[in-house]
Picture 1 (cartoon, rainbow, N blue to C red):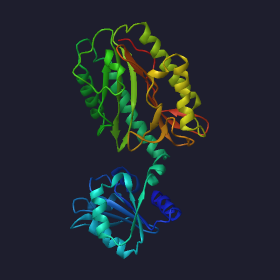
Picture 2 (picture 1 turned 135 degrees about the vertical axis):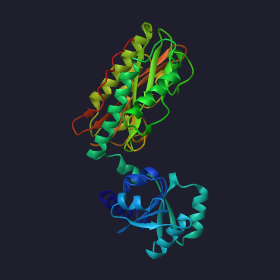
Picture 3 (picture 1 turned 45 degrees about the vertical axis):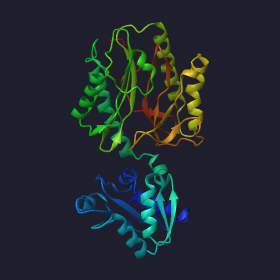
Picture 4 (picture 1 turned 180 degrees about the vertical axis):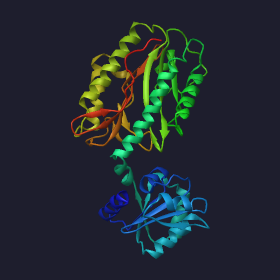
Length: 353
């Protein structure tokens, strides 16, 4: 219930009587509920969980400290009843997780002010508890196992989609419940596409191969990228790989609580620019991971907030040259007061199969 208490503190600060929680990720965070249907209403001193008959028993087990309400009709009817029961005059709703049609429906039902709220729970999620870090570590172990196995699978003629499917299978075999996102396998000239989702292209001798993938384990994600080659990819791509690796290492050296996302992004960007490839690095240096594969804090030029101990972030500089190929190397790290802890162990050096 410590997470509920943190929300209740925020409600008072923001002068809200209650918060309606509809994001499935935020709902899981504040209640431990893993089902697919439900919502939460958190007031200054109470927490209600509304779901239908399929999930009432599960919610009673998982949502400790919540009063469980079973909806037999439309779920927002129960929100209306709670607004009346608790005399809620100002109800916050998650603006990023409320469709306009649902907003209109809710507005027609409740006789109170509806206040859009953004980032209230997400900001709490940015600082991971130790058990969350341990779960992410397990997801990473599964991902690293799949990476080491896939190196034995890749040979000339194997298609990118075959590699992606094999990676997905290997992770599920080790206990993953699903993939973090569509697995990226980009080989040869296609490796110049930062998000080159696996295609039917056959991998050829001399290809640089970027794989960016991850899995869900007990609700938390891993996110890993490695770039390697089938044979000799040529001097320029080998040079680019070393620059990206050096940028990755420089970022790791600078990570610690107190540095801003903007300044950390600049570490990789300035180095790659200094080496003559600044225009070929078009995405951010990293992002937070947790219940979602992209969450705060952002490691980008927009984020002037300081990192804090307990943030789990990616470190993923890259260089992409159309017509030639590209390189990205990505680790997942925990921010600490004195530096960081890399949750990944597999080699980042250029592997030539």
